Every structure is written in C-alpha cells, then in structure tokens.
Image 1: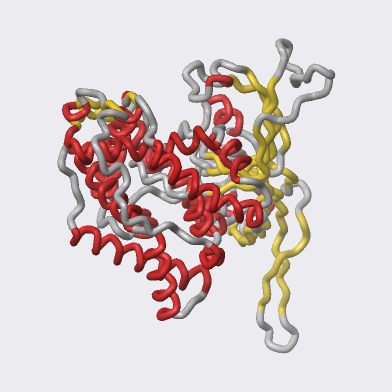
Image 2: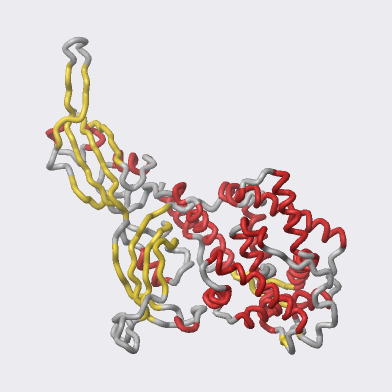
Length: 482
C-alpha cells in the first residue's frame, strides 16, 4: 500500500529523533488543494471498476522476504544448525577406549585412548547427511546435536553401532569419535550473507574499462548482503551460483539479467560477480509461531496472508491510477509549500548526514529537487482528487483519533530511542504532533480512506502460484524421508 510521502524533515526525525528540537513544521490551517482539481489533473475513467489479477507468486515472494528479514534482524538467533540432507565438511578423529582400574577403589574408568589413524579423516566431505556412508548412529547424533559450524560432536559408540564401518578386530570394544564441523555447502533453503562486487563486462567477458582504459568501478557491491537461494528474490543466475559454495570461499561467476528485469540498463545484460560467503543461516519456518513472533497483531497465517493480499490490491489500484493520471499543471501554492519545507529542512540535512539533500534525492531517487517535489505533489493530487470525487472526507472524530494515535506512536518512539520518561515523552510527542500541522493529520486519515475505497473498487482474480516456498518444499521432502 502506498503511504504518504512525508517531508524530509520528518524523515530526519524518524531516523534521528534527537534532532526534533531543531525542526519546525508549519501548522497551516488552510487546507491544501481546497479547490476544484479537474483543471489540474484527470484520473483514468475506469478506476472505479477495475479487474485485477493477483499473482500468488507475489504473495509467496513477500512471505519469503519476511523470512529473509527475520534472519537479517536476528542473525545470531538463526545461526546454521547441521540438519538432514546437508553436505558438510568435517574432521573425524577416532580413538580406541582406554580402560583404567583405580588402585584405591577398584573402580573401572574408561576414556579416550590412542588415536586410530586408519579411521580418522581430515576435511572429509559427508554428502547428504542421513544417507551417507557414515554409520546411522553417528549421522543421527550429527542431525540431532544442535550443532553449528565449528562445533565438535564427542561421542562413544559400541562396536555393534559401527560394525559396517569399523574393522572386526574392534568387535566387543567401544570406539570414541570427535567430529568437528568445518564447513558446509550452501543449499537451497539456506540464507547466506555474502560480500560481493558486480562488474559490467565487455564482449569477451573481461571487466569493462572506461575511455581511459581504466577498469570501471563495480556497478553494485556489499560487504554483507543477505540472500535466500531458491526463493527467486534475486535473479536466478545469482541464486543458483551460490548453491554449492562453502563458508569463507571466494569465487566468481557470470550472470545474465532477465530480459524483463525492472531496470532498463540491465535487461538481458551479462555481468561478472565476485563473491565471498560470510555466513550461513537457517531461516525460520513459516508457520503460526513465526506469525506470532514477528507479526503479533495477527492471530493466524490466514489472517496475515489476507492482509498481504489486501495490501497488494491497494498498491495495484493506486499504481494504476497514478500511472494513468494526466497532470495538466502543478498548482503553484502547493509547489511553493513543498519547496519551502524542503529548503527549511535542507539547511540542517548536511549537518546530520554529511551530504546535501539534493545529493540524497539524486542517489536515492535519481531526481532533481524539482522532480522530487512534483512526484510528491502527484501523489497528493491523486489522493485528493479521488477523495473529492467520491466524498471521502474525514470527520472530526476521525481526525481526533488519528492525532491521539500519532502522539502515542511518537511517545513510544521517544521512550525507546531517547530513553525519556513517560511524562517527558508524552509532552515532547504532543508538541511534535501539534507542529506537524492539521493538513498532515488530515492527509493521514484521508489517504487511508482512499486506499480502502480503491480496494473495494477492485474485482480480483487470483492467479495460481507457480512455485512454493522453499522452506515448505524442503519440509515436505524431509517429512517423506523420515
């Protein structure tokens, strides 16, 4: 769903609340766009009766994105645990049993004895844990041991648990194993943190050079981006090449962007990626516990998914109206208001961020200041026009409730981020919301009314999903093998 494009001063406050005392917001009592808008903008004639396709693949992609975000926000909680089906690298050290009789108590003590070199292995690859050549007793302990990479499994086994693995000369004896988890291959369903650089290439695959013969800088890079192979959240070539790689392994590969990629300059283009796997994580399972933990406002998966569908429909409806609206002219009064607000906020922007507001919008949106103002105004003009055409006018009660909700929200924010006591936080939040101005509160309520209206205007056909969650698929396959 499209949210109001807030002023840059508010954006600064949301990120760094401490600067709020330096910011002033115009409490304009005059309503914005309080005149006939048909002279300025025309909306598509059919927006009140739209037939939409809802791609359930998009719903699944949103769910996968939330799983990925959960790992990003709590990576320590999702450190990789060895599991069935893994390809892992281990050091296996095998020992015979040393039996000692105490001279004082005649008690028999057993412990690890001499290392059996013939049975020990270094950097040994266990493929498909659970169906590998290792004795099943050992595999089961590895699977159920809650082990991270670099952990050591230390166990004693009787000969009858190992007889297909241990020579007969050890029959009737106990054998000790120390198995250290060295590494694992990235598999579908793992979440990985990677450092990468992406380069444009020439026709023979070498890194592209500029007109001076100097190698061009990467078009994209990160020291710790998270990916979820198998979910199609990144391009297929990138995800597929991560599978099979090992932790800390450095490698490079070519990838080709799809022809329908969203950014024009990359459509169908071949590029080179240099990648290092930083960490491997186990994503959360998408179930009722996940919803309860991460989205406590929803009581069930079905309620959560219904909310996602509604948000998709609202977004599609809004995008249709926005993309097909025809602007004849941008009203001067509102343009000057936006311009003044940005100029006021820009004065302190560079002080807090180290770069100018114009540099920010160029990098973030590839816009000039004029284009940025007009993009904000287009959003406003669409909402106000739908509101006026359909009588969607907030009541005083709705405005009062919204104001109180905003005060409660900012009160909690000040208490959490600045450590203010409850009374000080309440006073600060009340002052801040009052400074936001009546039109800001009005727009919050009106925008929600418009979005609900557009949602009800849509007739929706759900398109069947063409792929399922990678976590669902793996869970199903594991259930069959167990």
